[in-house]
Image (cartoon, rainbow, N blue to C red; front, side, top):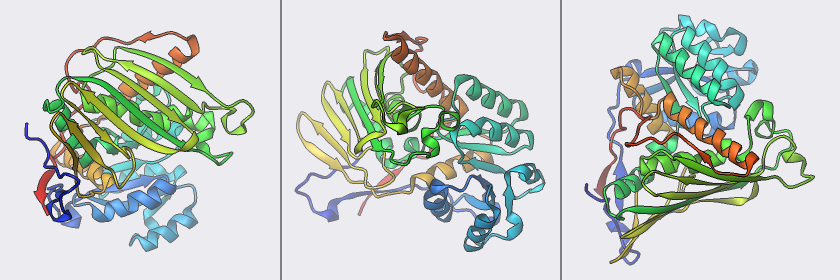
Length: 385
């Protein structure tokens, strides 16, 4: 497999490698129409711009608990007042032929309800991570979509990001030799008491289900393997009211059938840091930052050189949107289907169990690669600037 083009630190910017996702740009009336369910910060700051950059997806409707605010946003987005729905009238989307899919961007505990409601009215579902708050809920979501014949995709933007795709190619293409160790850290400060992510009935858990999931899912994505054992610790600062319901920090180790060991840390109580390092027999690579929306950096260190892969930024949300739209148009299983999110739920429940019981927890030993993934996303083409 061809390794990504690279530049050394002493090379000029004109030698930088750029990337472009070569996706068909469809006329607006041929694109997959979406209703976004939940108009929080992520929707406003990331999804609205992503739809404007998309070539296969278009925003057709908004579903919210604040119709007045949504109508103001709709006007700015070129939508009409009748394109705004409240949660009680969600099912009216059934009559919208121009809406083929919904993008669920609600607190975690609501994912199951709205996935099942969407499936019943025949709409495909793109659901923000984590898929839900438990294995039972995730299984029910997968079953509901299978029963009604609609697609369910877990919105794992990292698995569509060009830097991570390049890292995966390096790892699975053998550039680093056999992979022995991975370390991943995703920590941040969650300052707002009363914020939904700190409420167990809405979030389902603390830092693990939010930022720790990036460490877990990215390790599985890069290696293509499934862990066979977990060992974990959790900690919450005594007396800190933010963590009266959910955990502050989690440290967990994953062991894989190949012998790979992955050490991971996540927290809501430290200054922001997001990094990943992969150590192999012939070299190593690092992503730092690793899980941000922009400004990712991929460094490769082999026996002969140290180099940085310079990759043009591509909107991660537009990439995942267009992948799902392509699957809808072509009747294909997404690369990150509901089963991919369900597998992470299984591992996270084992992580919590290990922390409670103070012992390693065994997982079903699964051989093979990419067992829970569907059609591979379009490969990012690399071109010289």
